[in-house]
Image (cartoon, rainbow, N blue to C red):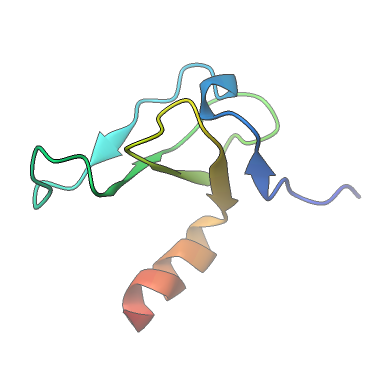
Length: 73
């Protein structure tokens, strides 16, 4: 059994990911973006990246972990 990936060094490696930003975000790019990769080892996980560095790294979360994180906020 292989462990789920925890991050990717470049979010551009998540081919086919449609990155979304909160509707509460302003145009100043100080937020995070999320995507659900549809293929590859990250398929089924939630990816999170810094909107100021769209080609930078992305963290990967299981849906349950992300839901728990958001609920705790």
